[in-house]
Length: 461
Image (cartoon, rainbow, N blue to C red; front, top):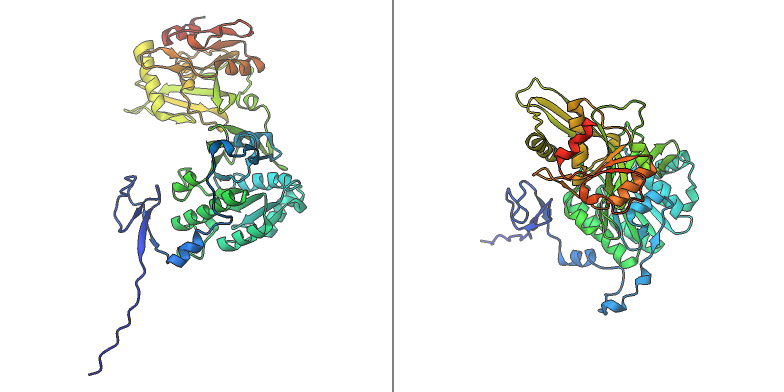
């Protein structure tokens, strides 16, 4: 008998990557062995060695070893965007060879912001805007609506990563924008655009291109319904700066917050106003966030907070009302929920005010999010003001941390906060005793208690 000839087909090999930490596993499991997250392992085909060589090939010669003291610092240059607020968030401007990731809700103004400032940068440097979501006609239409000079920047509609890198290598732009990273794909992978493997691969090769060519790369990223950047967590680890675009679609004001920055301060914010001509800088955001009313109102306290290197005045509002529920509601907007529960316990233990049968609502006006502990005293005073139905006064500024034993603890940069309050016309300040200035050069009347019981005396005046 004639023996049957068997066809040997090489089976494709697959590995599983965690979408949260990027950990690798040879087989699928419900829980990632690296970070412990559940249902995060995604399948990806293993590439051939030839494909790997092409994927990881660089754009410049191999690096050489040198002494740290011999590194030329003058090679690090910053590019001004033409916006004082945007440069503040970046730490002074775009750094050559850096990678910036900008995320935000759909329609909040990411593409508008980049288009405005890229046209400014394009007047002095080469700029390449690569869009994977819109056509070049749509970009030109937006630029015409904003009154921008379309001859100062180059634009291209492309989704293929290899094509974009080849053109960028030939054009040698100073700034390269990829809008958005979820729309690009590489021929080396079989996964669809937007998948974890494609996003990680596209970002990794763009980071490598930026470091080896000296081009500043700006990546635009989508966000999930929880507000986090879509894609693997390792995406934020690979880039140099991560900026979040915050704001409500019904509000004309927008905030850009730096949650990671290797070339500047973290938690720095830039404030913008959305107009018909695009985004405009807000030079004095404290005056914008603090409302001016003719009559004093209970439950409202002005907080002097610190965002990065900038002192910022915001209004804290509280409403305490009778509850018809067995478990009264505790709602925070712009503040931490767990910290509110702690402050209510402190008010009960050390101030003798029980709110177990009341609903408590707190809010930071203007859409600002305050996470520092220096807001404790302002939040607690706003709650007590609503309970007592007595206003603290529109000329009072408050900041300070409240400890579990009822003591008022100091916060950093207290003098800068007081100077910002004095500039806006505040005449009194309720602050911890440790933050009281040693000199009396300030025109603000300082009230500096050591405990929360002493701070409550302000309602008895």
